[in-house]
Image (cartoon, rainbow, N blue to C red; front, side, top):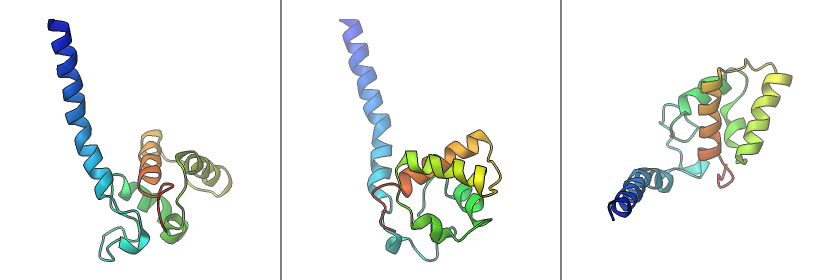
Length: 114
């Protein structure tokens, strides 16, 4: 019986930990038109990793190039590789690249309306 209670307790804890992520996903901006123009990293939508994407991308091109996107995680991943291999983008450290990819896939993903 103790095992079942522990399993239920663990499941409940996991559910509670997932709630903030759900709230963030519901609150995120999914349309370029809704990004506040006074946002520090405009035209990118707010979200974890926005500063890494801002500084990683603005060095070579307009940020509208990014917000015109709306790609899957796989496509963003390929685009990052392509930019490094063919466009002269400085290769980001692996942890920074992961943050950038997470941001792009989450905040400028397939449901993004640029």
